[in-house]
Length: 410
Image 1 (spheres, rainbow, N blue to C red):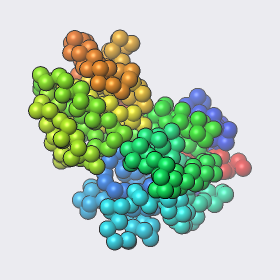
Image 2: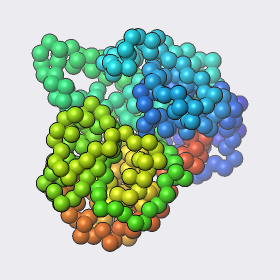
Image 3: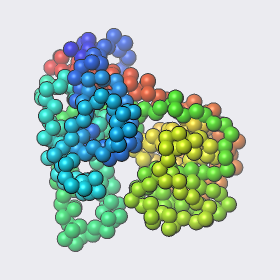
Image 4: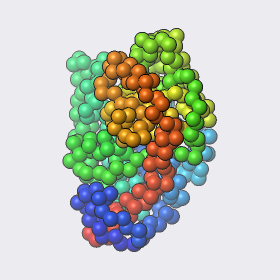
């Protein structure tokens, strides 16, 4: 058995009542040595979702990972997934699949359903698209950590199609039909998990809107011990992310092009690397991917981090806060959970701007410059304590216990 009975938590899971609204259940016990199948969409590199995956595996020594594609380097496996067995889909063996795996999205629902996890004590899915649809036994506990409902199939479909220059020609219509089929499958599998966890209030609202389900908010884990607070800042701003269109790094660059006296450092690579370098003015520099310690040092010494995208949570934003670095961010998505907004908090940790425009971002930077004395690095660091690995671990164990209790009383 995974834990002792906790009927209140079980009822919460069954009725989709947020667990955080119920009294704590300190008597709850979870067997951390149970056989857990942890299902993750894919592992192309080690970013925020993979950090969540690693933290889940860390809690359960007998966990095994099921993922469609695994391209993690050996040194990452050694550091974060030592002794963890990985199972991949048949498509992982296709020639040169690392270059085109994203284009196989239309096959991923079928591929995820081929994983046999029915022999495990429980299933934890880590899902931004497909893993939630894994087939489980009716009596098998299934806890789902939702990074996001699949973005390109729902409310962000039109921006993805536009960025891919997919109109209403034959190719565009084919993609639109495949996304329609994906939405049908996504809706059908939405009630498979016993309990959903959302990584932010923004994702919780998307789950409610798209699936009609409630979810408990459990912030992703941030490795606070690796992120010392630095009070003496250098004279540059930093933007750190995967260089994809939805991150809106182009907007940050355009704004700083119009502020030539302010330095901007871009950390990261991605499909937009070449076009963004061509767009940048002389006050904008690119570091590419950095080793972990260099990345932390760059975050920690920055005057502020600037982010113009709508992120589901944004671990990089929380990491910057842990380093004592203020945030200047678009006021939608996970940034709203992370930032203690200037003008609305006794101990502000950043500035939020209302619209994704050059003018609004420039105004936010100027507002930060005028009020930077009011945003203390120590306040930023203390704000990040909410996102500790310990808090994440506790929430996962409690939620898994709630799901197991549900199956005991059914």
